[in-house]
Length: 298
Image (tube, rainbow, N blue to C red; front, top):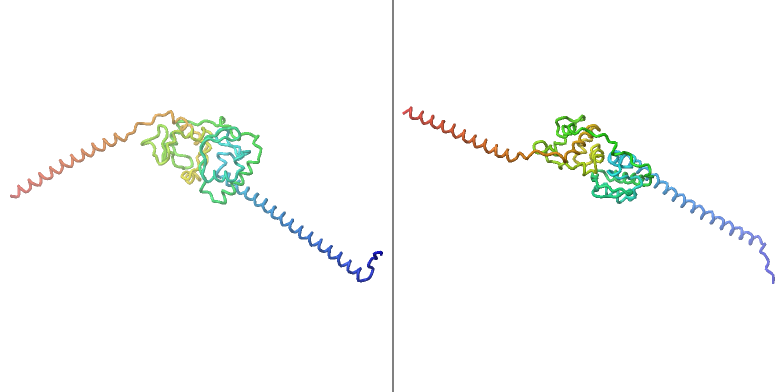
């Protein structure tokens, strides 16, 4: 028995409909696949654009808060401020956010160089600003650090110790009207009656900031919550910073005047006794005069 093809009109129409149905289903599946791929591509593009926006916003936050120490290029100052460019820690978003919020101090090794300074916290920044600067710092981590440091600490021109002392103490006013350091601090020979103790003793501040270059960078844009509002619009000029840093660098060798507290107490007690004696004599004289007046009326 041989199989014969169905050539009847009804059989031909059935096969045609089947073929059309299969072709339609294939087109439908292809359309769905294309739509899904397009949506994924659109989502990916949106994520890239959002990341780019965050990096751009973070660049502005970085310039205002971080560039003074880590430099505008992110290359830092060797031995004083660690680089962010090529820094593996800078690529860790959680680590960077933690550091920005809480600050960092103590020994830290970056790209084979040990740093032992102190970074203040920037907890006053908004969450959006912190997120954007974290994104920007992450972008720096991907760059090539082979360009080297942006600033040679040995090239910083030294200031004048005497001029720095006068600026620190307030004998000479800062050009932009900022408060004298001695309004809150003591250092070296400026102490006791020559300075207050509202803030920390700055005698060892050069060592604290890892050298004169580190302190110079920090004074260019003080990051502490107390100093930022004072000097935001009254920046210390580069020449003034150089002089103040020179004075603070010499401060550990200076002798602070002896504490005058005991002498003041003794002088005050002696003056009080003299005052009491004078009042007693005056009062005695007044009583004698009054008694005499009474006797004279009898």
